[in-house]
Length: 245
Image 1 (cartoon, rainbow, N blue to C red):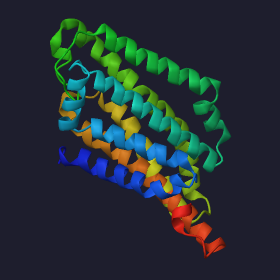
Image 2 (image 1 turned 30 degrees about the vertical axis):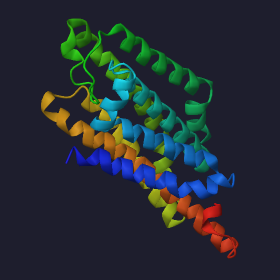
Image 3 (image 1 turned 135 degrees about the vertical axis):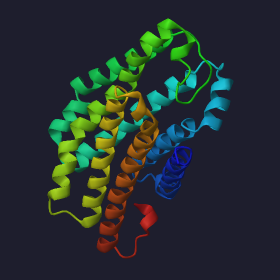
Image 4 (image 1 turned 90 degrees about the vertical axis):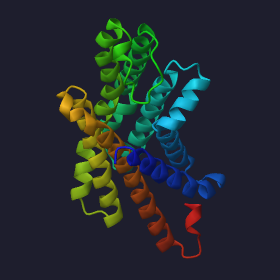
């Protein structure tokens, strides 16, 4: 099952990106396309076969793992900006896109790269499985690497969660409330993913399922909100194609 989940994530993200191409070519809401495109790139790097090939082209030093984490940072940031604006959450928007939020993003990004550069090279592994065994220094640094990698995602998710839960309870169109509920599930799964990094070893095997689930929930939630906009636009103008939204 753990081998299938990354492929499911890739299919969901790629399908969403492809569906947005006609609208993006018309200059309509291109940011949404780039969110789905980044999510697709992250999904590709989360699959062992693709990861090993791409990391091999980069020197086989797990540079692709840092690239994957930074792509995920960018994806969650863009999602959060859209959600805070769309659901009217100015406080959460300031926490994520305002000066404090940008400072947090910079701190986690620099920390991630710095810790990685301090580690000894290890064999290519999409889950960074062998990094700790490469040297005692790596074993000591690995928790800090994962804290940086998961910490920013958890910060953004916690900032988003109140606005998403509030939107689920409001009198909004069903698709919008469904999208908010799915993204709230994604936020909760993201925070759970951070907690699992510090959990007993017997719980670690479920971490990939939780982390892939977070991506699918977030992406599916955005799709629901997008479909709600398309439906509302069709009601206003029956002669407009849905691909123009």
